Length: 468
Ligand SMILES: [Zn+2]
Image 1 (cartoon, rainbow, N blue to C red):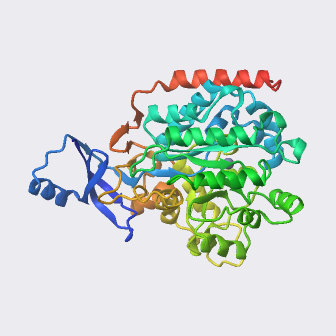
Image 2 (tube, rainbow, N blue to C red):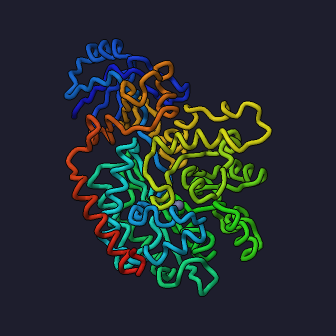
């Protein structure tokens, strides 16, 4: 049993139901659970009354403390192919067709190494929980490889076992050689659930099933995956949906239905489902998402860089849809900056909405932080994370606001985290463990990891015949 005390935070943002923010805030964790939150003076009275002497005390003066940020959609392996499609200015379908053959060169080591690199970048930008979507497994690679990286780093992980089964020869988008048989996909999905999935409170590893998209898997695989997920506790369903106008066209041509209508016909709406993107829902579809309690992960940088469009996040939040935030794959962002992604969400909702008089007030910094914390917890069905309250998991981060980037922004220190330039965390605690201290990730040699990662990335390009 061990007590960790954080005290004297300039502001501690709880994200509790009342959205309380505590000046001179303090938080006490016992092992992996938050046991008390108050201002620092009241916290000392509490410690005295309960005769508690903390094992470790961190003075967080000069920082804003937040619940750990939650990334709800990612493809960590794509750090291996950053800037290839994005620098060429490709939109989604052409971007995918350019990258598929390179991704086909991955192996177990490149999946592990890229996951570790991407997760480190996310942790240093405030993420404490990460959902990843790995949907191709060439050359013997497995979901196990990225789970190993997450376990080594101590990040809370929601790996989703993705899949592609609808190759070009059957009218799908990906080349046949990176698609898999449905029999193997289902067998391996069962294996990873039974090997790694933990449905308990404070779980560090929850597996989900995630056929890649309507244009890369069959209707049968969507249905069979849903049946399998629903036969286990807390195994959720995830896929890409309504990301582009091209996808709308594809679904109308191939299935005679818009993307959401198609997913509904496959029994893919519900509180155990979350869709990445939803850039192009119409008003009726927004009602349908709300009514069915289906979750959405907003990925603003990816939607901008691939010119997919602007997701109607304001409307979806107002309709009480569960909306979280994701950086999306590292090759369509091309970064893993979680706080920066919240800033992008705030900025993007302020533009492109003709008819709204005061667009700058259309989406606040605090609302964007809600997407990245409580919003993400709702999307992943994790009532044990996302806010700083007694009884919740000890997942929290501190950002300095006494530095160069925030100088002069002290009128509203919480909003300044998003209105000023995005910075890295000063402190990150995940499941009660200190992972980042004084801005440094403990016990990881980042330089040699980057070196190895870049060698692997280069070899993939050479093998795909795309090296310059
Ligand atoms: Zn994605």
